[in-house]
Amino acid sequence: MTPLPVTRALFDDVMVPNYAPADVVPVRGEGSRLWDQEGRDYIDFAGGIAVTVLGHAHPKLVAALTEQAQKLWHVSNVLVNEPALKLARRLCELTFAERVFFANSGAEANEAALKLARKYAADHAGPDKREIIAFNQSFHGRTLFTVTVGGQPKYTEGFGPLPPGIAHVPFNDLNAFAAAISERTCAVIVEPVQGEGGVTGATPEFLQGVRELCDRHRALLIFDEVQCGNGRTGHLYAYMGYGVTPDILTTAKGLGGGFPISAMLTTATIAASLAAGSHGTTYGGNPLACAVAGAALELLADPGLLAGVRRKHDLFMDGLRQINGRFGIFRDLRGQGLLLGCELIEPWRGRSREFIKAALDQGLLVLVAGPDVIRLAPSLIVPDELIQEGLRRFERAIANLAAPSVPVDEELAHAAR
Ligand SMILES: *Cc1c(COP(=O)(O)O)cnc(C)c1O
Image (tube, rainbow, N blue to C red; front, side, top):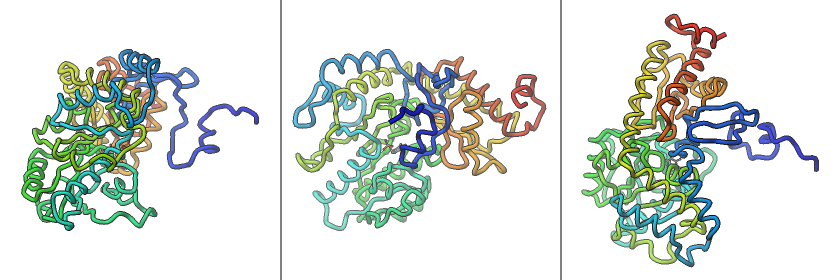
């Protein structure tokens, strides 16, 4: 077999076409910068989809991984291992949790949470308490159960028959929720800040109201903090900023800073329903993943880092407002901490993906959250200078796409040619 050059074109020849990756092939990363095969640099405001919370190749994470790699990679759940127990203990110390279950992805953590909620109801209530309530536009993963619970019908098309007993109601609409919840409801799952659905935060009154109604109807409240957890909002977990505590919390993306790991956190009473043999996963609690996540969690729990996230939020918002003052293409700039959404006005609605390409051309990585929103999810320790430089690149990208509504300076005029 002749070795082919490793280019984006190879993707089409050897990969299932479920993704639509850009042409760039990154080969190295450091902090908030990436370099491609040609040595071109990119400022990373995408963070591997809100994952690389501590940037690329953070020395403390590299050290934790390489140290553990010399010692022990995998033993399975037939045995305990030190990194997993230490990480679980830290998560319990730092949150409401008393028990932890480890898995490898956000979907798996949510799958565990939803199964636990059903099992808990089976153990403590009659056979009629099976229903799960979720919210429109929510995203909870791609397994058949979690994708059905998610509130975006386009992701379940063609995959039926779907698991039953799942209802959807509008997000941030407490009246609609109050009308939907009943004694048949066993669990409610909500993202405190919807990520994929458009970077939309729950209102505090909504989350508070959901909590109260869950208590009244003895339904478990699950917070999906796969995206908004791990310092992303400027709080270690978003629930802490809201002051509303869930019964089960799921976390993934940022937890390993780029190493695959997820966790489901809950109380001892609820956890008891997952008795030995009732649920599991081969790699959950893998020593490599837990060693990296343990190092990441120590950095993320630092109040100084979290205050930095809130300060950097303001830097981003100021810069984005200035860009909008010039081009007037955003109808809303929103988000919490370093999860930011720029919602496009007409005639740009439906065209968010064009901005990914335009940004790449300027050496910048950004994300979208649906067709109308450009999403930024940089490292939580992105240096201020790189925020400024990245925003300059973003502005040039926008200048290339949109005719400016007011005269632009030399540099922008140059970039637009
Ligand atoms: C990304 C995401 C998931 C799914 O995580 P995977 O690791 O892709 O399975 C679930 N919930 C939310 C809120 C997410 O953002």
